[in-house]
Image (cartoon, rainbow, N blue to C red; front, side, top):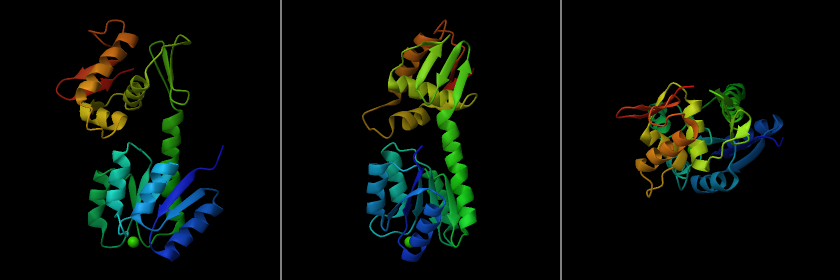
Length: 226
Ligand code: CA
């Protein structure tokens, strides 16, 4: 397995170098950028496994970088690096899609704990297998099997089913599903979500009009039960 890669976007040279050295020593592949524009470009081109993102950056600030990354549909975990006194801005960072934050100055040990927690969560999410009824949904091979035989799904059907199964028991709004599966594409509406759910039900439910796995949550969206 190739090492997990971490992109550091930070304009303080000493901090950037220190982080790079420490993470490299821990076996991570490290990419660095000293401004928001370069950071955004690297994030989109190289798709790192995790991003450490400073807020106050030249060219494009950290919030904007985070927002644009999410807009492009990347769900890469993002840890915001905030300065003391910027804590009130953390809420904004989390609202636009950052996963965690750490306040400067921080210890390497503290940072590594956060990094490893997010990477572990990501790995578990990716390798998880969901079993329901006679079905087996494999996130890593992107296959749905019924009694060992593959049930052909379109990529979007797979992603919707996987998202629902991963959040089993939780009601997900149509907007949530749309944003996570289709990204921020202005040409797609929540009708696409409903259409996808209908074709999925036709493939997995015994009676699509009385579904047991993908339940409709009135005026909200859908909930997976399995
Ligand atoms: Ca800065």
